[in-house]
Length: 593
Ligand SMILES: Nc1ncnc2c1ncn2[C@@H]1O[C@H](COP(=O)(O)OP(=O)(O)OP(=O)(O)O)[C@@H](O)[C@H]1O
Ligand SMILES: [Mg+2]
Image 1 (tube, rainbow, N blue to C red):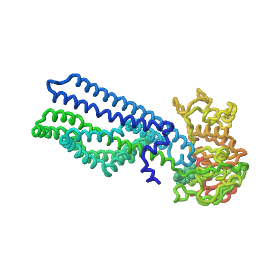
Image 2: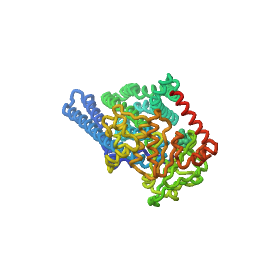
Image 3: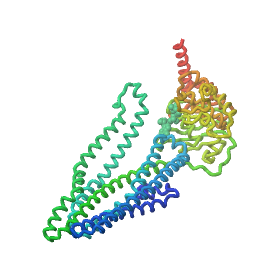
Image 4: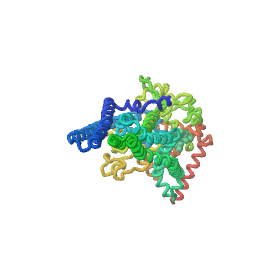
């Protein structure tokens, strides 16, 4: 399947993005074809002029010369104008494709299952879409008008070479044939592989550098140098080695190629002298010589263009492949007709799950949360708590077992039903770079200011808004408006209050620096889960204590389950966690005193 996709021409792959401008492709090609043909004619008329000058000598007809000169101007003009039109059309087409790719990338991204975003960083998604748009633009806008030229011009030159004087044609062709051989040794499978390696390493270096810039605060804090960033450092070295190898490998053939392609005179002059000596027709030989010496370098130019064209085609091809491959993701199919959402009891039955298809992250998970009750999940970092919550919202589908809401499998609910009825407050709440109002109301315009005010009060975030000069209209990230992790989570809670879904999944942020924030969040969490079926992932034992049921997750399994009192009596992991937590509080108080 993948191989088949590779064989498809780049134009075919780009067609779906051309919208209603598909017709521009053949028109642009046609204009450039006529342009390429017209551009050869001036040389013919220069030949006519030289013939007039050399053959007729003193009887030269200025009228004829003027006529030919005007023809030179005319055909050159037609060639330039048509090339220009072709270029304009190819740009229009390229912009359409650029917009089409971005739109389609955006739509596809919107329709991806939630797990997709967990695996692919937003940076990667953005890069693949933007690169796809930019690189296909370069190819379509700038290379399209050259395609026909790279085919038709060499053919016309060959015709000229043999039509006027085949002996001179042969002489002019010798360096071309040799340069062609040299070029094909550069452009062979090995060369192409190397070229791909070169672009890959360039891309790796650029993505590693982004990673490096992102981590500069850490690098600075620990007084490290670029060398400590081995991946970035290695990618630079790798790139340097490749460039050196590339240069060494290409130095000789490329020099030879340049010499050969520029050396037509070296072959043509001796051939002309020989011809003059043997035939004695100096005038005819010289006028042919002028034509050949003018036309031959065109071949070199066209060959360079075709090399560049192939390179850009490969780049465009690879970027569109990357674009298409990005969205090949195990899709989650939602039924069109929902079974209807009427009860919110949550049940996990023998659920096992693995991210990579090999190592189980969850193993035989069983629990039930009755309608309106709260289940708290506790356990070490990496034990699988967040994964449990995500599976309920169908970020991914389970490998074994089933997850039921109201006795019905989550797979039987429509996407809308699931999304509408589940609120998810993420561990690392991230806000959109828009106004706080939009962040809280989620862009819905049926939310009144009173609703927002209420949500702010309940989520304990009114103070945050009141402290900002522009209040709800403050745009996150602009003019240095940043919120702390705890503040962000409170805003995310306000969002959940607005949504008011009957099922709430709360993934408590791991660390809040100030106890004030922590206290406010816990109060807000309590309010949010009131009367809702809740799964709460808690890192603070005090949050957990009041939950109806507590499950201790350890290495993907539920090892203890019960109320606070029951688990304390069990004297197992939970009790140990509780005792540790208590002593850490005492330690903090002592330290503070
Ligand atoms: N998208 C993912 N792809 C592959 N593995 C993942 C992914 N997300 C989590 N994991 C792995 O699954 C395991 C469980 O992760 P999970 O996030 O559920 O833990 P957690 O209990 O929520 O931890 P924490 O308390 O630190 O939030 C970990 O080993 C983690 O490395
Ligand atoms: Mg987690």
